[in-house]
Length: 119
Image 1 (spheres, rainbow, N blue to C red):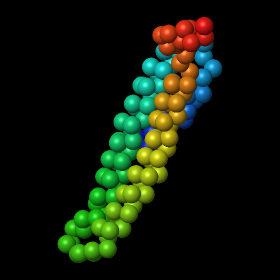
Image 2: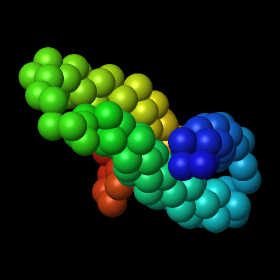
Image 3: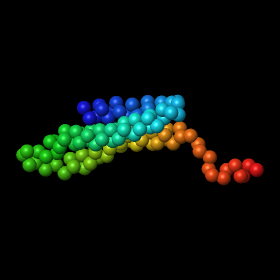
Image 4: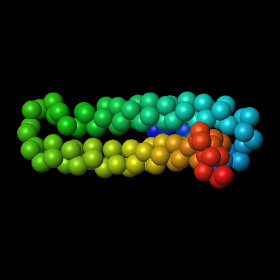
């Protein structure tokens, strides 16, 4: 459930990124707030998805019979890195694109004194 919502929210954030660029200026603020909320939910469901994956893999790591398998912990560590990169990478890219969409769509305000240089 968490991974599904995570992926749906990622797609939604990319759609809002694209929409921000083309929205009229009076609606950009609302779109930016919506994008911020969606990106916040993306990161929340990223943590939820990681927790769900960790809970599913916790049982095989601790056997009931007490049999020790030293390579299993290293393998689990590599799997954690793979999951972090495969879920965290898209979340970082979506966040970066959201920041670029918001910054790129802002109206340029002239700096004070810019007209004096034109004289």
